[in-house]
Amino acid sequence: MKNKAFKVVADEELVRLYIETQRNIYFEEIYDRYVDKVYRKCLSFVKNEAQAEDFTHDIFLRIVLKLGSFKEHAKFSTWLYSITYNYCMDQVRQVKRQAEVALDENFDLADDGYDVELVEMQSQGLKKALQKIDPDERAILLMKYQDDFSIKEISETFKITESAVKMRLMRTKEKIKKIYTENIIFFLIVIIKVIWFWRK
Image (cartoon, helix red, strand yellow):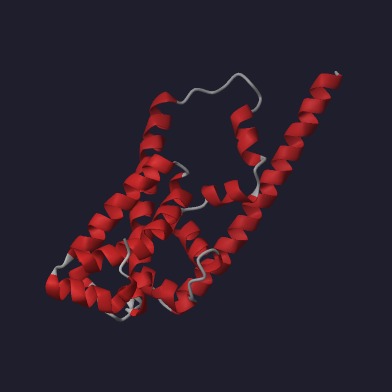
């Protein structure tokens, strides 16, 4: 049961109390405040509920271990989300590297003129375009336009200047537009080819 007395206590104060006393009641309140948000963010990366739960568990273990290093230069929520993003991106990169190795070892050119699975992927538009960019680029976009992080908060999370954040946002938006447009054109070409094939 949540402690109602903590409702008016700031995150940063809860962190100080936990560090000073090591009483679980303070960390449990932090956990209750953020576990759902961390889980949803993990789910946005992996699209698998069980895996997102595992990620959430691992992230909170990291948070317990790192709380002593929290400095109040940024809000606690920003600090927590930076750990969440970095953990998820590390996992995504690891899976991507493993997939690339498997592809190199097992690649075989299909007999068909196009890959049906690829066509299905391309047809989902913007959502899939997001999956095609680097994890760092996707994270910055999601932080800005989904999680409403300020430019300053993003710069603190990634330890880069605010100007660099703005530049990355601009370049990433241009990349997304290009991928999205290419996806639509590719899909239309495939549709035309299929129609032409069946009319032969």
